[in-house]
Length: 282
Image (cartoon, rainbow, N blue to C red; front, side):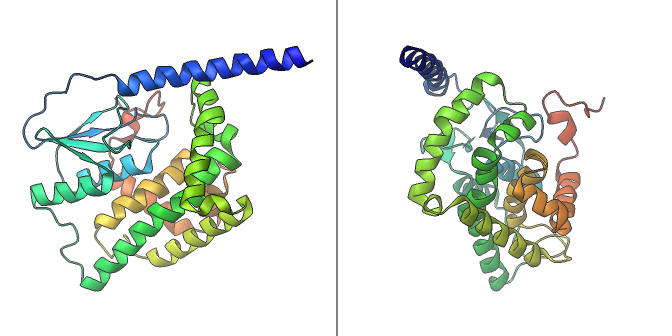
């Protein structure tokens, strides 16, 4: 029995180590810089998926913002991480900018864009607090909790993640994320407590939206890119039994309608972008 246990775990560990090595080589190997025209943003991202243009709410946020601001961009889906060890990041006129927040700040300054120009100072402050709440709290208590901890197997099946990468997810990525969550603080709570935090956040977000078309009124603003990034993944990227998806589907219909409203307005090519989608239009 001991020999069998050692053999089995050695095989699994070797398989995982090989997978990590392959991914590390892919990420760290220098690639020829894609030549871009002036004033065209290159978004460094993960590959497209079968359920959304990106599995990352931060990539979806950044792409949506570029579409809202009508700024030309292209995608580099080679999964190369930026100088801060994060995705997404952008290249604009041969200058690299890391992090989705600072990428948008740089885009606004370079292109002289301000999607919040109609907002009052109080509305701008509300948008800022809402954006940071979603990215620094709700993200961890909903999508991450459902995807990696409560419904990991179902989520990977739903998202059609290849078997090879499922091993990486379950035996490596989850361990890494656990350390991040512990340092963040939310990982020190029980799963039940984390789900309660996420549920409370989503209900509050639903109240903030109310019956408005967008979070700050009749027209979309910067915060809507962030809200769509996370809510879009919850609606389209999580299985039906995931707690956050189920909450939106059964109790918070205004958020679901909002997601579809944003998708229809800014992503008319959504189905054509998806990988192996049976909804692609000719």
